[in-house]
Length: 84
Image 1 (tube, rainbow, N blue to C red):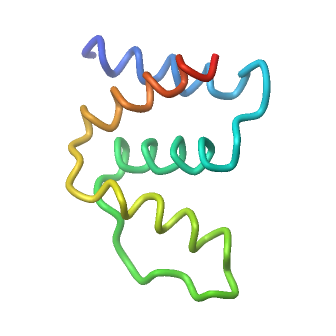
Image 2: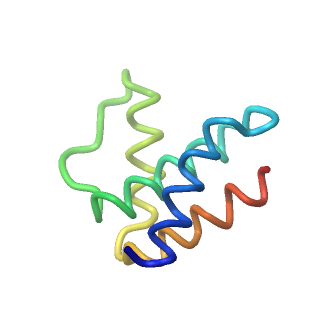
Image 3: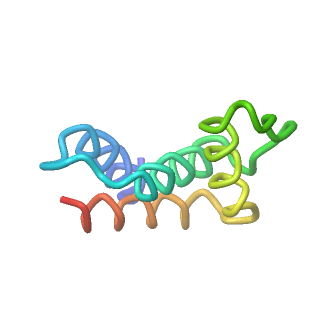
């Protein structure tokens, strides 16, 4: 396993025990980076306007379209470190 993959998995674990809850924007960024790193580009239809949370998550993930998994992992690690 690569060093980056280990750092990413450690950051995922650390994100669950941050000293304070991240802002909604940071939470969306963490979600989007995690999904991009683990699943690739967003697919499917954008949720309807009645599903505001799903729509926000979809939109945050869609902004990362084309970002490769290694870059997404590094950004995730950096963001968790900045929040810790």
